[in-house]
Amino acid sequence: MSPRTAITSAPVIDPLAERWSPRAFDTTHSFPEGALRGVLEAARWAPSANNTQPWRFIVARRGSENFGRIAETFVGFNREWAVNAGALIVNIAETADVDGNARPWAEYDLGQAVAHLSVQATHEGLHLHQLGGFDREAIRAAFALEDRLVPVSISAIGKLGSADTLSEALRERELAPRTRLDLESLVLVRD
Image (cartoon, rainbow, N blue to C red; front, side):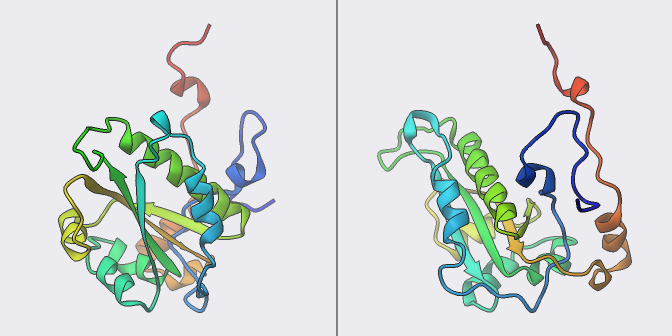
């Protein structure tokens, strides 16, 4: 058991207990063409309202022009560490269909798809860190996204690297013990 494995109050499947969000990625690891198909397939099979599947992704491997376009939108500490991931995935909610009909559950459904993606990534021995610190309008402009396609988050994905490669502030966060609210604090009503 890894020191990063979650200590849970009830048993959960290994990929859930082992999933965590590192900032240190192995810069020597790269994804060959098609290597992310499994994680994207897991996202494809996530549940969605009326089976609308209102999620879209922009997938860019490190070294590509699109990876650079995405990385240019990062803000804050994300500029320091996320550029070391093997790939970046922009997670997009399709908030209306092509006819303009609203899809009010799109962001919720996208969250489920990304959760499935992250569990599959863990199962495949990969690590993923979701981030919200980026310029959404810059992503929209860089990829000519229609108004109905809303960039919600970006997932940095790759092989785990050494925390020693991070700045002191980020290294401290990387090595800090994992914590969560206790289960009783999260359940408001239970019969």
